[in-house]
Image (tube, rainbow, N blue to C red; front, top):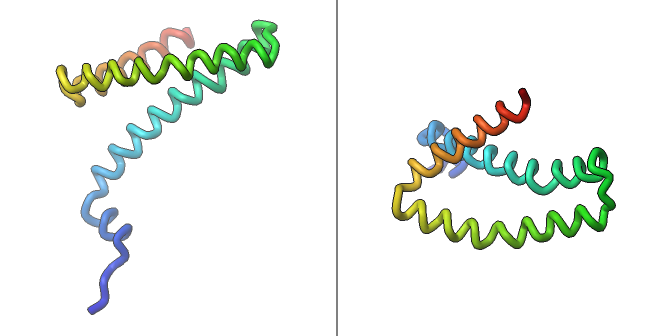
Length: 101
């Protein structure tokens, strides 16, 4: 008996779920990019900060991500993961639109 590749079966039977997960992952990756890479570059180019100063800022920011992540994990357990994810996505979109105006 010939079996299909597991990856092909996932795409064949669960494509909408795969696309939703890819979208969520892309949203998280964009947030990480903005928070830790773009801001460091912005601080150096426009803010006149040294690379050492931007390293300190991003290091402290990364340290603060852990307790914040734990808090939002707890919050998701209480208000629901879907509601929290939708609210954070909406705030992210509103923040990016507002900052570009």
